[in-house]
Image (tube, one colour):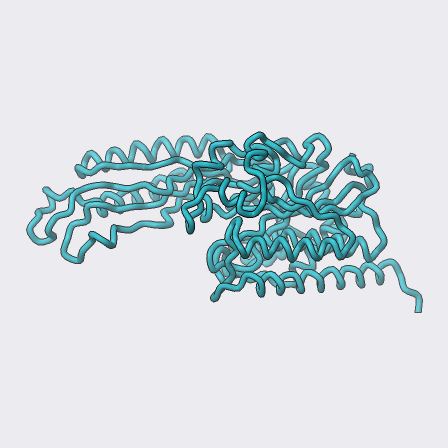
Length: 432
């Protein structure tokens, strides 16, 4: 029986998908932390994940190298070795998180490289599968550390002032522990020549419910929300006896915090009705367990504030209103508001030309993705802001993300693999 080109492609895709499944299993085994996985940034789990990916890449004929910050570049030579197409994501995870967040993008890149190798296809340009460090800001409270160091744009002070949540030690210290070079990072050292970068593509599980609700396996991302965050905000009032202190004489920090949450929810609803893209979250709120009591007015309430939007103007307006509302509440309730340090990220638009090529690749393999914005932040935003054409391919994922129940069907991974391979097989002239 004659073997057709379609047969060979189907066999190669099946082998690539099988490699992907094995790599997910290896990651889960190497970073298991029941009920999920934990891959601490610059820690044991993340390093184990990097080793798994490097071993797979070298077995496929790839070249493995680190930059000064410890980001890993797994390069497969192309026809034009002077330019590089980057595909990748991060390999750290939140504590007790899911196995697919971040890792799906790296594994998809390696699976695509395996398909091309099986078909005997040399990509038009060097294909670099990029493994990025420290994307999850639960470890180091700064956005996109891996992509910023990879591009040489990390603010130098972050190396010394940002500390890891579980150790209290600086980012620079953790880089040194693993044999990397924070002083080179401080100088802006980078392995990426922006002028020679064809594009950066970040496949990623969708971390919200849209694809599941729409019954679609894949999504093409049009833009990534920016954010501002106050991670250590607090209202300070006065502790007092719950029975002996009248309502009018209380300096109740919890009531002030509750009023701020309610007021910001109302602002969100009004702005959303007016057409603004916005998400407002108070993800952590609580009192001091060493001092709070069943029978005491709370003298302190701590809260984390996370605001996201595709519009920088909207972010600025909400930040201004947050300060106004918070100070008004503090004055009326005779408490003090301390917002703490401000952090965040800038919104980023994905490259229309790359979006078009992804759309064409999906059509080639009979997949009909939806176009959507990303509510979560991703390293692709850093690449886009650095002037590198960037895109994202979302893969359907059930049960949300940043939890052990995160679930991507391998059938959807296989569809994403077919799209990526079709993209990588597009003629060089379409990229240049």
